[in-house]
Structures are given as C-alpha cells and as structure tokens.
Image 1 (cartoon, rainbow, N blue to C red):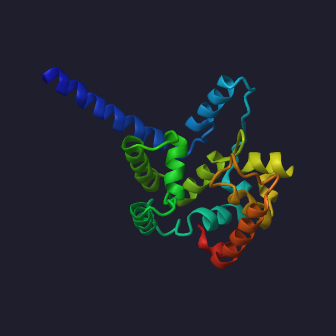
Image 2 (spheres, one colour):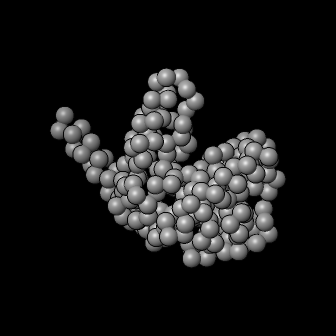
Image 3 (cartoon, helix red, strand yellow):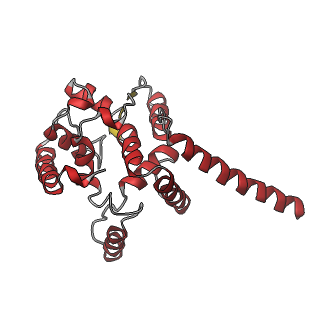
Length: 226
C-alpha cells in the first residue's frame, strides 16, 4: 500500500508540475503544433489523402486589430470581463439542454484556447475537467492578450488551415495585418464549424452572419480590447 501511495503521489506531482511548466513555457514560446493539428493529419493519412497543414505563427501586433475584435464579437463578447468562464451562458445552455431545446455553445475563447493547445476534441467528464483546469491556468499565467494571441494562431479556420495568418494568405492572398473589417468578420463567421463554412466561398448564411458580426464589432468598439 505504501508503494502504491508513493507512486500515486509522484504521479500527481508529475501531472501538476508538467502541466504548470508547459503553461509557463507557452506564455512566451509560440505554439507551432497542437493536438488537433496532429489528429487532423492522422485522419488525412488514414483516409489516403495527402497531409494538409497550413500554419504560420505571427504575434498579435502583426494581425489586423479587427481580427481579435471580430472573434470577440462572434464568439465571446464578455471575453475581457470573465475569468475564463461565462457562467450566465453556461446556465442558459444547461436550461436549454434540460428542456430539450437546441443546444447552445457556452465555451469562452479562454476555454477554446485551453482545449486547442493542450487537449483534444470531444466530450466526457475527464476532458471537460481538464479543459476547466487548463482554462484556470492560462487565465492566471497568460492573461487576456496572450490568450487571444495563442487563440488566433491555433484555432482551426478551414480544412488544414490554422490561425489568422494562414487563412489570410490562403483565402484572401494577403497577410493577417492587412485584413479588412469585413474579411475579419467573415473569418470569424466560420468558427462555429470551419470545416463546413468557408471564408473563401461564403454562403448566403455566412454573408448574413458576417453582417451581424460587423454590426456587433461597431457596437463593441476597438476600446473593448486590451
């Protein structure tokens, strides 16, 4: 029993030590590869396809200021106010699930970043618990500006396309720094399902959503961030 207890104690210490260290490292080091990128590449190989991976890390200062504003307007309008979790949206999502209505997404940009960088897609209590754990860590250690920088560099934005710089080059033929307000809104409009929606070939639904996001961006104003 003592050996088992010692083993478990060391496993717990190893887990917390390694995860906290990795979060500290990524506070300064660019995130060049994420678990989702690896999973997507494996899926492509298993399907007999060639590997599609477009990803170019750039600092937040080299992106259009409309890009973070667009994703906040689209995905998480209280990003600057919460500490990782939007409890009001979570409460609404739980009530909708209980009444059998359409399920509402309640993940914040912080939660999505934690999942993208450290975890995998899917549900289950274990993954959700780990997501909450990493969300708390990055909120405490990184801060909002770094979370946004990592989010905009790691989020899936198309088939084999990750991050604002890659999608700007692939779909618009320009660097992320030159993206217009409308282009940023169109990119943000794909984020609920970037494998279904395309900012290069937008549908009528996408254009309607783009218009809504632009309106929300104007309401929020650039002063809403950092």
